[in-house]
Image (cartoon, rainbow, N blue to C red; front, side, top):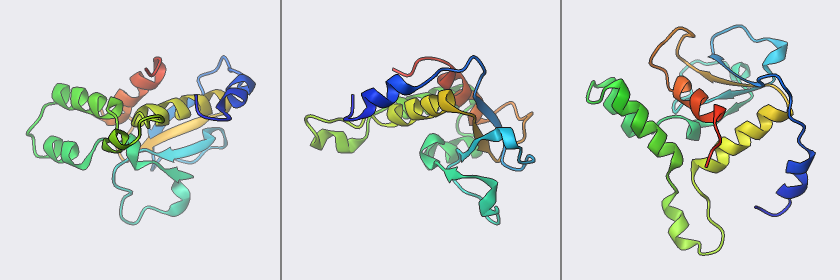
Length: 148
């Protein structure tokens, strides 16, 4: 465990409520949204800066995977499997670090889970709420389980 995280993790109080929500970045901002995280690879031209608190492009599928999806070179099932794999792979820079590993996106996913236990977090995308093929649906399932 990284230095200093033990004390922080012990101080986390788990709320019985689901504190991680998912919505479109274009939906009306609400007080109970809490920390608003834009989880898309592209920020979006003309998107007002106050629509989100932070932009975490690393939670979104890679540009290569998105291009394959947008150009119909991969189906939804293949996209979902590839996206899950991207979220769980380590970074190439880990080969240069013998003692302390980055563990790729796992750290980011655990951080979002932990933030959701401390208070409300809303992950957002450009898709509408009723979009069946949105990466947030995959991300929601991953965050609902233990990230290992």
